[in-house]
Length: 233
Ligand code: ATP
Image 1 (cartoon, rainbow, N blue to C red):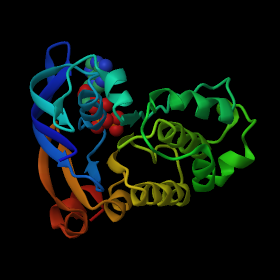
Image 2 (image 1 turned 180 degrees about the vertical axis):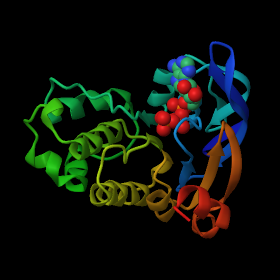
Image 3 (image 1 turned 45 degrees about the vertical axis):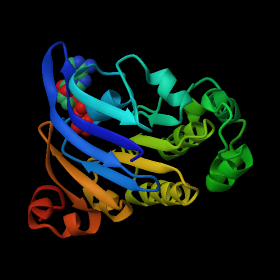
């Protein structure tokens, strides 16, 4: 396993938000976590990278335990989180943002800047544009592209479809497929169950901080309970 989350409990100020979550990502997989607003999806990703305190359980990446406070260290080891708010440097250009992403790369092989531009041609056209003046979809692409500059082995994506039209979401998901074809594994959390279940190999359904269902993504998309709760019946 590339990532193993075992009975993890975590939350804020002593209040438990995630209750004994167990999940894993194998090399080469796209795994989705779907759930409603407030189910704990962002908290899960922040706990995995060591930004949110664990109350119990364990997170292991490449068989090494990740502890609280270690997010820079895990990024250097190729576990990269693209947060929902994208965290771009708004007053820097596209090109400068990409250069900032290479700090975590170390000696790992990964996408070159040229390959990233081929994946997201719009960024190539907009190299000199300030990040804050780009559209939501373009900013999402730039945030993923910047993470790729760090040569990740596992990319954690927090609701990349936020603020995007279904068409732009497909464009971003299409890029995610291409990224996986290059050997990068992906754990993606989404409220947008319909599109992400089509993208993923496996998925987990998160409800009120617990895993309610898990399995093959296509089977989950056909499951009556998932259809009723997340796919509009
Ligand atoms: P969303 O789609 O709204 O981002 P989510 O599934 O990602 O939802 P989280 O953001 O993980 O959910 O939030 C889960 C719960 O944790 C919510 O009740 C939220 O209010 C709470 N929470 C999140 N961040 C904090 C924080 N920094 N301090 C205190 N409580 C928080």
